[in-house]
Image (cartoon, rainbow, N blue to C red; front, side, top):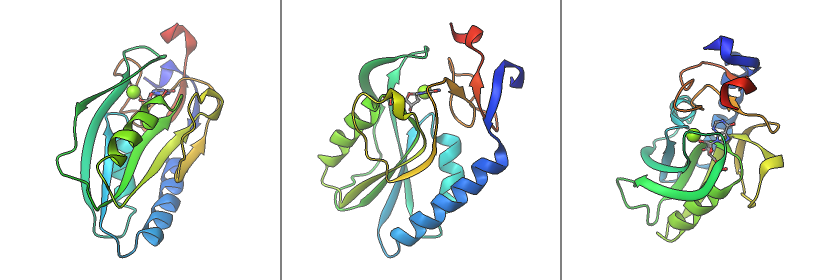
Length: 178
Ligand code: IMP
Ligand code: MG
């Protein structure tokens, strides 16, 4: 799998250190609140499980499955909720956890859907942001790293459902997806 990478962008240590920092910020900001941390599956699964262990507060977790991508590398522009949250978020402080914000279409749509349910607050924590690709503005409250416009895999990020279990984040060789 590592052979399919053009290069490694973030190694395990770099990722872990940044997540520890994010965890500290979140811990400080949410002290005393009734927090539900929502993972957006499947891409956030690895980040989510590392992040929640760096949040030193009592919390609940929940998951939502939304997708705007098929098996390819380009967005279809449509967002589809395939599995909804288990519990009502009315009155709760919701922290959404996403792997990467690219065009912003998925997150924009999800934010609209969740805000209609009258939560006390909704904030976003994204490991990666690809600013040059943004079509719709998205406010990222806690962001791991800014990345350039390249197709990334690993640490939850997939190409055609592969590479999610790579412990690093790297640039996929172009010949594999083009
Ligand atoms: P957006 O709606 O274009 O912002 O797409 C966000 C979703 O697209 C993310 O949650 C990822 O699942 C996927 N995505 C965007 N860029 C990449 C990438 O470089 N590698 C793998 N998945 C990506
Ligand atoms: Mg994906």
